[in-house]
Length: 379
Image (cartoon, rainbow, N blue to C red; front, top):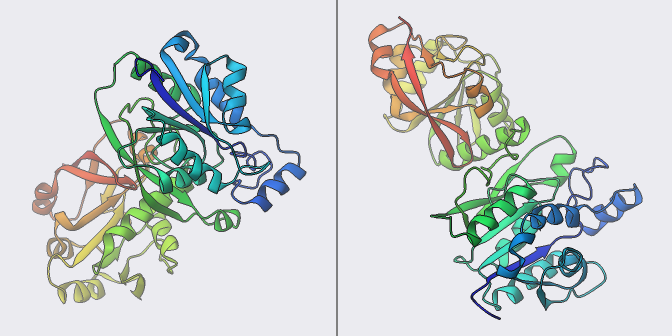
């Protein structure tokens, strides 16, 4: 195999996305696939791969594909007219998670430069289990759940990334999170996100998604991402949980009763007190050493207030004891973008504190995902 050509490994999960059109919210597991097919679902992963690879046909003489037999890769490459070799053959008529993992092992032995895989978050998990930490990978989105940061924002975007690799345009790499949600809980209306690890991908931010749905946020999944980040950070901290639906989503993810328009006191994922008054909250906060308490608050949509609207229990004396550095401000990017560049606002009732807290502040917008936003007092 000539290394003057880019050697690309290709693995397709033929069943990826099978359950989406028939409202099964995923395709993990043989039983779910059989039910989806019985309901009339049609495989779409090969079509998604074709969309990605068609962009690369002008570079066919610069690419050597290494793939799997049949529907796991060879059929699609043959249809598109690419040169390829087969390094792995599935164990049965229907490929499985074990086939994906074994295929990753087989393709890596062929000294591939880049591993392309098509599927959803379940496929990403399977790839992660077998991948070498220094192996460059990129996912072609084809599943129902595309929650991980290892996927391009679209099949064509994946093709564009490979095109840039061929043309020597990439300048950096990054490690991106492999995320997944529990499909059984998802089918019952509860989104529970979990991080499984990370893989090395091309750092092309315009083509590769953050840990959320494509370029358009899905509220349920983004809120689950934010909740996962807060839960991971918590350790042994006491949490003052502010009001609002975003904070409520975090409490729900913890399985805790929440006061939507009030303030709750939490420790070790246990509610110690609900709907506290300012005096009650100050008594609890002041009994703890600075740095042991985190304040979780959100942004009022459309207005941008973080303090002084609907959470007056969070008085200046409480805020001073907690400290600005111990605030975990949470919001979806969609909510921030709706402000159209306007700053976030603080109106604690204490002009000096408002001035002291003004400036750039980090907003948690997803799992391991933060943005800097300007915070200012109201003149």
